Length: 338
Image 1 (tube, rainbow, N blue to C red):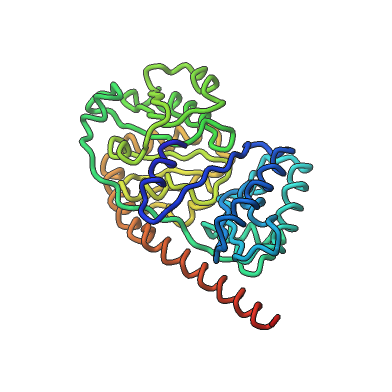
Image 2: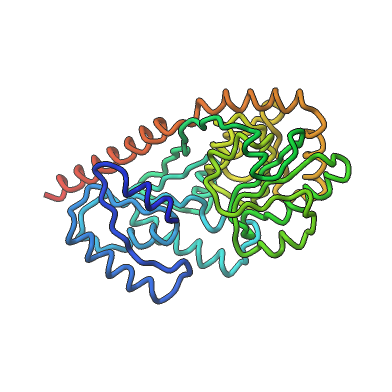
């Protein structure tokens, strides 16, 4: 993502080196590994080598053992957490993760559910740690300005979706739910931030008056224009969308996936939905909230209060502690070998 790369380049004391990788697993990964090995050897030595998501995590842990540096891996949702994964794919991905776990100094789960899944799947790194993601406060924006940009009426109740239009995020389920709910609450509008392979399927739902597809955008400054966040994902680890929704003071309706048990307290700042919930069931949840302004306000206030537990500073402190423990273990092992 170009916005992320630009933000990284602007940080003081950081050096960004681009490593070309393809998203799909394939023969090109060996070329990426050779280039990464060369880069680490030429620009190191490093105390920490931290791979984020499965592709980068695998490459970091496949680096030659002769290269110094504790190998840290943050999956950001293990592939085997997908409830619809085929058994051959689950076998392949699960076996690969178990093998690579032996070369992992610390595996960082970003939610309690991801940590439980890793342990249940037989992943045995030297340390399985949990460091929940965190975000900075969301700066309030002018609600009416956002509504005007989205062509939304001032009295509309706006439900938001943020994420890739992919099977994992299931945007079609959100679009269908909004369309069904609008039959009973016509002033309900769904604003969808994101894009991807399922865009045509979302557009095929056909509710032109009830959906606003605004494409890729920085969601943080747009969240104050929403009345609630709806997350229809099939699986997650700890999506930043949930944390940003807390910081923006939004009520949340979300499927029971990773990160939800930390951020959504049933009946306090939102409600959890079954991962298998049908569009009609999600529509009922939308009708409940869209018809009760007092409930929206109460849950929104509770979300903002919960946001204090998931700050960027707390995430940095937790990650740094993992780094220091990993370095200490490697130093102790080096001393024993000598």
